[in-house]
Length: 297
Picture 1: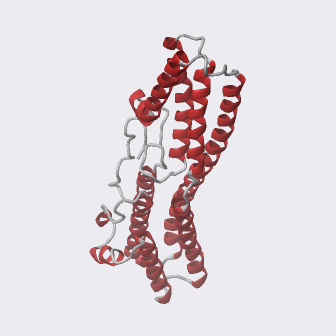
Picture 2: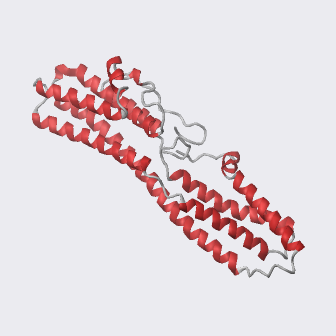
Picture 3: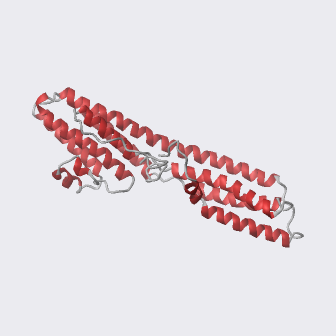
């Protein structure tokens, strides 16, 4: 997730270097053709590129709004996971018999593992990485047999909690309450997976790039009376603004793509780990994850 820090210009320019190169080539080519075949190319009213630029702005606005909605929904999902994780441990401490502290700790640590595993899974990374700090070797071997590692962790917690209820360490109504929290975890995971698996229509990107290049051509023809030393930089600046907005929207539309713009799931999971360990009364807790320059992990 990007922070309120100064973003390096190199990071920004790197995102649109190919598009800017294409605009430079198009601008130079059109400038050459208009100068060599001026009598064959009709005058271009400035209103035509202005109209195309307005259309581009409308399409860009729609894409940015839709992309931000996806990103904000992802952030709300992880905000709910934070709240439910705290509630989950408090419910365990309130409802489970006092003599079952070992089980409470085991379930709570498995919940920490679930948060890290879900983040890794959504980013397309190894969902079992570093989980040996929180779960037993047996649990680790069990979840490796599953395609959906976070779901397997939820199942282990559900089965252990059911075992506590069968052993008389958890009342029926308390079990129902805790089970509702587990259902909320499953719902949050499903919503995040839905965002991850739903592809944003690529036609928006194709149409945008097509219109931007048309805009560059028409604007270049309309500005034939301006010296090329001023015309080409002007084309580059205007088109770069469009391409940067489009690239920002493209990054926001997938908030789980392991980019600086995605949801800071590792940072959130670390905060959940700190909260849960402190609820368990532990003193050795990790430090909050520090940003990597201008973004959080």
